[in-house]
Length: 507
Ligand SMILES: [Cu+2]
Image (tube, rainbow, N blue to C red; front, top):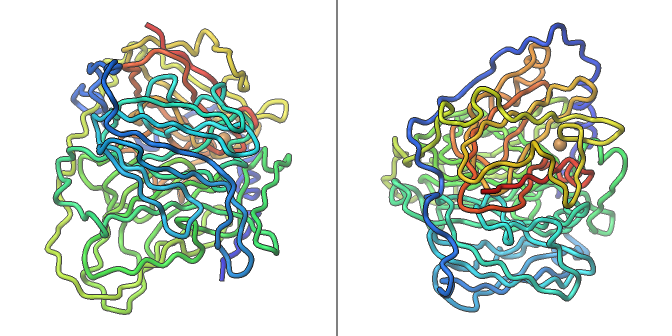
């Protein structure tokens, strides 16, 4: 039985932030995280990229096409889905997700080169974006590169990211929300030399979990509405799917697991917690393993974000059900996301490593604009979401959207406009960044607390949530590639409605 949720939770959330009088505009510090003391980038910046003349270590053929899958009992659901197969090379693999509309799990090895030829078999233009990956301009999936039905596009890039959990999804302008909703998304796992790789659960104990919400019609078809309401709030479904399936049950043994969680929803934010109150041991964020595990009673996961969690079932009896729940916030429901059923005994003398990885990192003091961060105001104007008063323009780049190749910068996102307060998960293409500051207007602190306590700002990130009244500072370095990239809100309806801008990296 699929679970239906209260669709108005987001509306209430938005309204709760409206019309709040803010005196003075003083900013209270909510939290900050230490800049990391080493200046090693996330991806071996100095290494040259275009190793021309060299043949790729992995060659994939991918397509997007209409299909039908069994999601709910009864009629099959019409979806759009990605397919992939290996044409050559051995530096990775393609792993289909059984009985799911999701695209196959792509495994890449760090340092290897990949060539992917993508063919559009949909009835409308599309293009793939490799979310979180540091790739050349031509491979980033900018909407101007969208291809028509029947056309193909070839991506060639070297896998420079840290080992971790990334993903891919469409990025055509104005149609990303409906295309993702129709089923187009898949996971990427980059494998590499993590300090603690051997100490972490692997194989069947390393479980990818893609969390999405959908709305179904009475005959089991996906519903999607682009209305004024969804342009404002984003589209939320009333049925939770994990790996494309409702009521997701994970049979587990009495041992530790590594869960890789992606929020692949268009707009829904999750406040995740274990049903028995055990803490979540977070081991990784968007850009791979943390330096050390962090413990949280809840973890907040916004659209586009990933988090990896270690969980140990060795003390749980056979027959126990431990549920990863979404906990109520802003008037929404508490509901199960993943139910782990303990089904068998198994001895594994694995312990959670104290040190997980060499995180590396930048220092704010080294940023060229540390005195005056590049700032981006998130606000509603003329009934549209804007960044510094601008909406998306396919080819335009404003003077304050040009950065220099090799520069380390501080960017500050400011969600402190009082006109309309909404959460915005901000995503920057081409980079992994560090969160080095997070502040909240005092009048918003209390209403945000339930979600803010679940932030994991300690690791490398490419998407960061800003709740109403918040300002977030990030450190980012523009390495390896010149070209046109994007920054945008990852609430896909906000993105489609224009809450996206180009930025240019130039030498
Ligand atoms: Cu937004």
